[in-house]
Length: 192
Image (cartoon, rainbow, N blue to C red; front, top):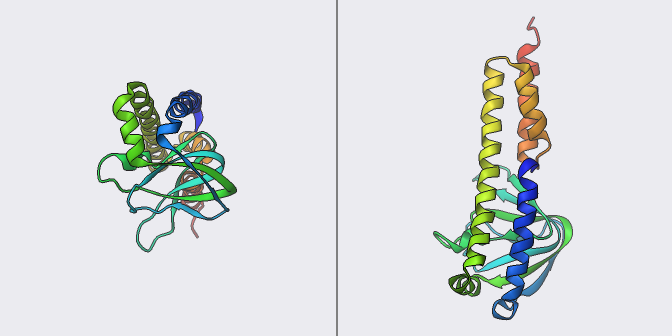
């Protein structure tokens, strides 16, 4: 995730510490999942929030009749399902175990909301996590737009820069970078 990863690591550490102070109130359960298990189904009621203890999980967006798009890979210390606490109380993405087994601590969403009511530090860390993830998504979107513009103006150096950064990302972003490079190769190849 590039430049934002150190900031995310600090947020994760503080969040873990704050959540541990609410352990008795949250009464988390340990869930273990194998590779390719679906932990969260997109659109399902957001009844639980998860803290990843081990494993690698893919956050995927599903559109009808299209393959799942990997938005991010999450690892130990990451929180999953927190967006479902706000708004329509539904999970906005699917989460699948990419590299298992994965161990997760699961707390009821209502219990976490109750803890948030009385702990402003916990609220601020949850907001910091959401903000950092939004900044990363904005950065990725800007890179994609820059790459598309570079492709349309035939700016090979800029396209290479963008694709190199995107190529280090997970799943769909790396795939998009490869597709942009293929389009560039096809458009630059002389046609008979």
